Image 1 (tube, one colour):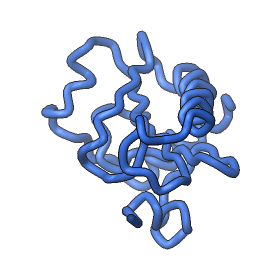
Image 2 (tube, rainbow, N blue to C red; image 1 turned 45 degrees about the vertical axis):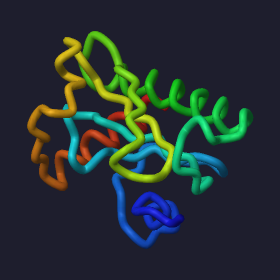
Image 3 (tube, rainbow, N blue to C red; image 1 turned 180 degrees about the vertical axis):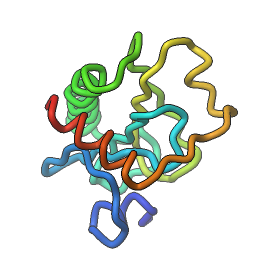
Image 4 (spheres, rainbow, N blue to C red; image 1 turned 120 degrees about the vertical axis):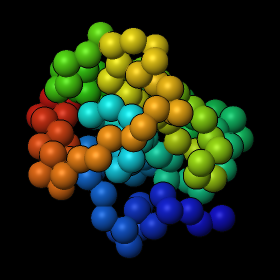
Length: 130
């Protein structure tokens, strides 16, 4: 079940990559709720996060933590919120969102419009803290 994330993983669609290893990739959401909104994606093409095998699920959470720590250092915020919705793209992934209030994670909020330069600056800032 290839998804848009499969195409990003394969390099067919560009992204603002934060980190990558053999099993996971982290990149900026191009329709962010907040500056620094990151997606952590399993390279396994599994739709539902709880259908991941235990090793992959735990690896996804560990990889998310590594990126979240760097994200909090790069983007001023009270917390890095973690969310799994799983409806918008049929490919297991985690949202990491720098937040100051719970409303910052409301997916009904208008999405930010950022320039290519802004995305690159954010990505570079987070990468510096990995």
